[in-house]
Image (tube, rainbow, N blue to C red):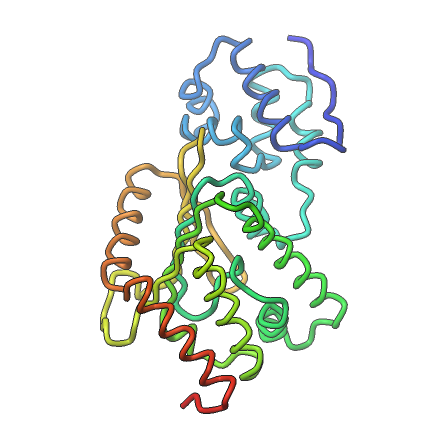
Length: 279
């Protein structure tokens, strides 16, 4: 098989890389499942690579070149597709969000990135690493705020967030920063751009007490789940696991306040922060 030409770095690398993979796979007469078996991955993973919702890592690229006889094409070009301004463990998630049709997220301790203001993002990043140079922090903040531009589209993606009450009451960056952050969330919700619910302390124990959860859905690719820890993160695409995690999110929604009651609480807390009455 003749090797395809290298990708144009000015175009969308992951989308073009996925299109070339689909072309090479079909030319080799392999289904997604058959190719996945040769690489010891699932057929759905191959589908996600072809759809551009998953990042092609160097090890996978080398195996693809061997199996499909593409003369090192994927190994060369996966480097271009891997360039990102985000940290290594989060880059693939940020790129997946940009192609998502729906994002459902639960956060126990902080306001999620897509709903953050610059001041809140700056406070979070500074807390992550107090010794980081100011210019580096500003680069991180710029990257995080760039992600929020997904919400400039009037309807896509659907963003449904369940915020733990602890995230609203943890004073991050000072009272003025928290007031601005909460009013920003309220404005987005009042404009019907996002769905926000608060999981109150009164809900007691719940199904996601062990940590945060993000579910990402696509129009033409299987869904993904993302788990994040301290300076690390992991994507999950196992269908059975995704089904269980969707159930977890549904239970969180059932335990949370209604949208209207959530907004009332968020706006009340914003006023408390504004007037320095927050206990």
